[in-house]
Image 1 (spheres, helix red, strand yellow):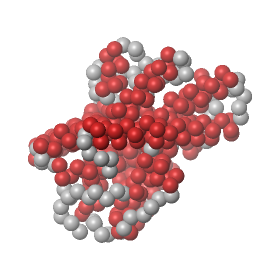
Image 2 (cartoon, one colour):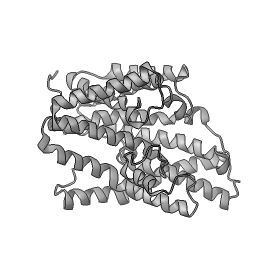
Image 3 (cartoon, rainbow, N blue to C red):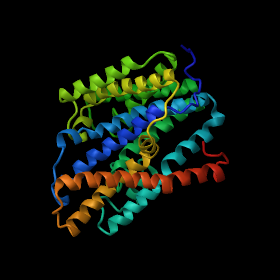
Amino acid sequence: MTGNIFAVDRRPLASLQVLRGLAAFAVAVYHTHLILAQPKYGGIDMFGAVAGKGWTGVNFFFVLSGFIIPYAHAADIGRPGRAGRYLWRRLTRVYPVYWLVLTAVIVASLGRFHHTEFSWAPANIATAYALVDVIPHPTLPLQVAWTLFYEVAFYIGFLLLIIDRRLGIVLIAGWAGVIAWIGLVNNNGEPGWYLHTWNLYFLCGMGCYALYRRFEGRGGTVPLIAGIALLSVMIAMGLVDDRIAVTQALPRHLLALAVPFTLVLLGAALIERRSGGWRPLWPLAVLGDASYAVYLVHSPVISALATLNLRLGHGHVPAAVLYPVVLSVAVLAGVAVHLVVEKPMLAFIRKHITGRPTP
């Protein structure tokens, strides 16, 4: 057991990377089902009972982000001289590849290979590129980018801890209190990005990191099994709708879902630490490394493939063939973007701009 939760651990946690990859795959499964089921893409509805729950990969992403940021930057807390380095690392991780994919999606929309309806107003496009509210209620060309608004808000919140630990704790606690009042007490499911219950997921992740440091050396089998069992019970009870928008508008249900994902994350991290680490199978390792690119790329690729199916195949490709093919190509496209674009880009930024080699 350790009492210093602000100590930094540089060892990679392969289990969390694998879970991140599986979460990205689950979201891709969900969007394949959601997009192909739309009448404009052929109205193909398959595997809905299972695929409709795939959006919960987003829940894990948010809890994991809340864990990873203090895991990587705990030693920076209360050291304002490191604020610039922290911001640079976070922003270069999120924005460069996102900007490339977003630009590609906008260009594809001109050729009608991507059917997302969005405003071409400069302020709306600026909001999409900035991932902050230049205007309220933007319509995003890359729709999965809605989660990145929450990510950027959390990065800014953690920055407060780096600038001043005590002030940061007070401000973040106040922010969480307002969110809890709006969502859990008043049951308001539409308060806007920065006051939505989703933001509490990051705090659950930070709490998970604190427990991970506190229970160093102990096994994580109990929280892992408890998390899986609890999630299964919640799904059986109908707390997880087949559409993310339904559960997202129910703050209490949404926050309750953070509990099993926090337990799974804690259990996996503790088990790996106690076992001394492990080497995952290479497909799982690659999927984990490519998870961000897969998340960004899969939805527009699915839309493009569904459009091609209608134009070239006249919609006659059997659904049992089309669904797995579209899903596989979308995921592999994300892996390709990671290997060909994202990974070299990050290496170039770290070597030639940041002046630090890629870890």
